[in-house]
Amino acid sequence: MIRARVIGSGSCLPANVVTNDDLAKRVETSDAWIRERTGIIQRHIAVEGEKTSDLALGAARAALIDAGIDAGELDIIICATTTPDESFPATATIVQSRLGMTRGAAFDVQAVCSGFIYGMALADSLIRTGAARTILLIGAETMSRLLDWSDRTTCVLFGDGAGAVVLQAHTGIGDNSDQGVLNTRIFSDGRLHDMLYADGGVSSTQSAGKLRMQGKEVFKHAITNIAAAIVASSEAAGLKIEDIDWFVPHQANQRILDGTAKKLGIDPAKVISTVALHGNTSAASVPLALVAAVKDGRIKRGDLVLLEAMGGGFTWGAALLRW
Ligand code: UT7
Image (cartoon, rainbow, N blue to C red):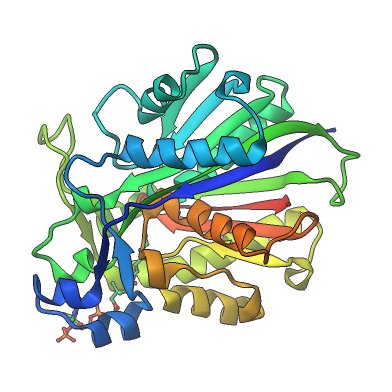
């Protein structure tokens, strides 16, 4: 059986760091409130002229070096982003050109904070069906460009960054001992649009708009939906929650990470958290957390890793991999 195996990973963060105290100079907030309600201490914010494609390219190059392959070996580039450089073409095609890749295909996926999980589901299908052998999957965002910097209920939560993995076809025996993606589960419910959306767009206002969120409502749905996705993915593989070595959640709020772990009886020591340092980087948050845990040696070859996310739409999902 063909499996999509991660052969390399990398990330890229803007050099510019913004602390909670820095934000307290712009809006009525405090380091204490942000830490207590979200666990966030700082976030990286792109400087003027620094675009989503710059961060995506940085993560892509790091992932290709880690994988030990050249861009010419890629069949497809998928970039999960809500903050593309331009309304068209896809940011993935900008990365394709800057990597010097002249064959194959490149396109974006839009599922907001769940974008990397959606991209993983797509990459896994393309590889398992034989449509592609090697895929570069990127989650990249400059969420700072979509924020209303006068709205303290949202502007303190988000950050910029990018993470990427290279997935390659690998022959397994078809059970859970295989390395690679074991399954993915993706969901959405468009009725919940008004809880988290951007109040603009090409066909409605001819501008990108600003992020709007009913935080308390999103919070409640987040724990329920993420827990359901984790259960769906682990049950599909015939595994119990305790069989999974690492949980790599979307990094929206430490209280969501803690709440989900409590609901499902997950050992908090198995939950990778980078929210304190990155804030919510939307589609980049899962790969940024994944790369951090791979680089510091927590996630090792052979470990069972469950990625999960939830975001605007609502969209949510999970991906189970043997690293
Ligand atoms: O990535 C997609 C998924 N997104 C999420 O998962 C976000 C989910 N939601 C959350 O993480 C939390 O709901 C928030 C962090 C957004 C808010 O936390 P909360 O505990 O739900 O606070 P709240 O909205 O109930 O606000 C409590 C109080 C309010 O004041 P009053 O009405 O009680 O007087 C807010 O006005 O805190 C106030 N407040 C702030 N105070 C200082 C809201 N934002 C701030 C702020 N600084 N930045």
